[in-house]
Image 1 (cartoon, rainbow, N blue to C red):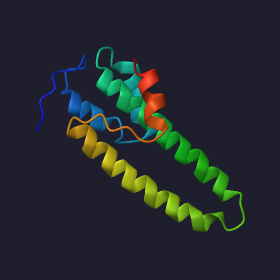
Image 2: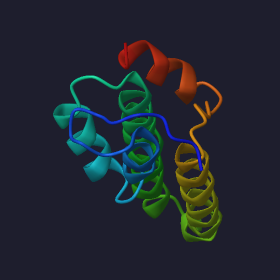
Image 3: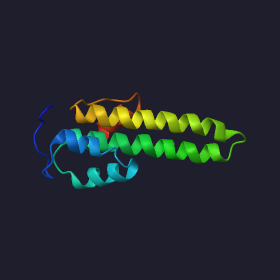
Image 4: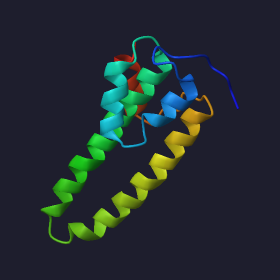
Length: 110
């Protein structure tokens, strides 16, 4: 396990980074607002907000498209896989950047 140091909330950075993904947008917003020092945590918080917020919007759009429910299953599977991967990478102390989303998250986490 990588020890990265404590955050302003008193948790290890890697644990707080992983927790940013736990409840998607909710924990992303929570840690983005509460964390005052760690750019690592803020990065994962913003990435979580954009990723799961975007997937939520996509799910709503698919609900209004004929046969969109078929694609919705694939979106949910992708969301689950991304959720696990992002939490794991953050816990390992990696600044795992998703394509496009990671670059945006990096800008807003500074």
